[in-house]
Image (cartoon, rainbow, N blue to C red; front, side, top):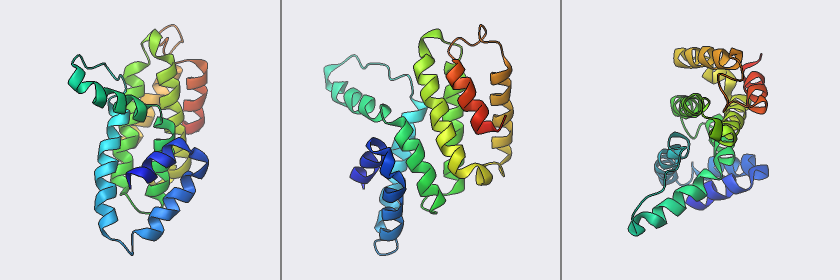
Length: 178
């Protein structure tokens, strides 16, 4: 299961195929649903812990390297999560929680000049998710509030949010339908 998540993140061209593979295997192997839930929960950290601060002890260095490797594949994970949600393998609520985590992280990092690449990546992740699941997500009140916040973000002047590059702004406008 972990290999499927990792391969989907690395090879985003085949994300839909990996999601379909899981959808086909889950009815015959019900325990996969539980395993997928565990992995989904652990991969949510890729979006919520976007800063990736280094651990100070050598004992934790292996965990630090593992976390950094997973963070390099955020775009693939976001697309994969959206695809498995469209197949009913995770709930709409779980997809909403992921989407809100990505959006909150983007909002938190947008004021920082040195976070442009991270913000661009998070904007791409939002675009991936919204491209697949915007209809189901728009039914939630929390998403309506977040969309309003993100629209306000794009309306601010670039000097107020130096971490929000023009690429990020256009990605947000695209996913928000502006």
